[in-house]
Image (cartoon, rainbow, N blue to C red; front, side, top):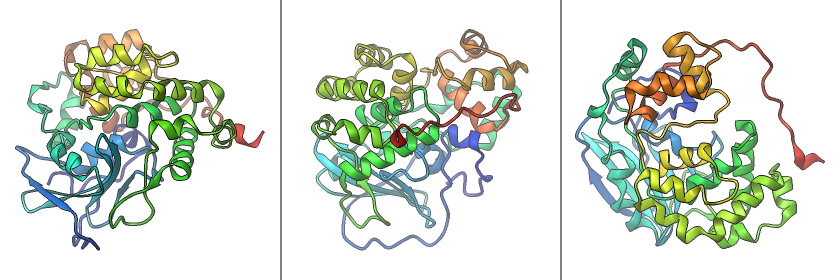
Length: 333
């Protein structure tokens, strides 16, 4: 597997979707689960592929263990499930538990980027080419689940990542159910739509979620069935359906379909930092806005999201010229 000896991740590489996955003696699972072996057709770095699905280091639905395994939970159409993925020989072994085990294993190849075509990407800048050379195992994951990416993306609107990760962690731990299977420590499955809809207003407040974001999530879960149907649509059509929900705009829909669809061209606009990072990396412009970013990414049409991820993974960012965005804990009010 590519990426065994990856450099220590920086804040920017984490934003680019990198999770450090250790290499060591495989952990022996404590109980039997359903198993599937799969051999990718090229280099595959589990940490790079699955990293975007993790919402912070304390995400109760995701864990990377020192033995090289990546664990994740999911609320599938068949019910809750836990998936463990690890390198096995020249391929990958997936083990799954719970009612959603079969669903997770059936879609294991797509989760690991089988539907992605890295060969379609042609670097146009030296920095991008160098990063691609150093990260040959990068593929774009396709989870096939919309709400599990949409809800945390809504939580990340207009706040710091630390605030959003904390809210996701608190809400999933309190209202999600324990993960099935022999998980490596406490893990939980994301709550179902009805559970999200019944969370009291004061619990949103304690988690630091303002009324605007909470209301957007409540509107989304009321349309859960229709939104999950978007997993079978083309990314553009899926984004259009998501943006019908008041409070879900281009930023949120792009962040969602990048994970649910493995959308190689759906670049995030409306982000506070991404335009300046792309502008600095490709043109030395630290004041670039969305229009400049899109112009710089135009040579990568069809692959703009992949290009942006490679830029983030390069670690080339402009120096700060202002204090960090302040963190407001509304739960303490």
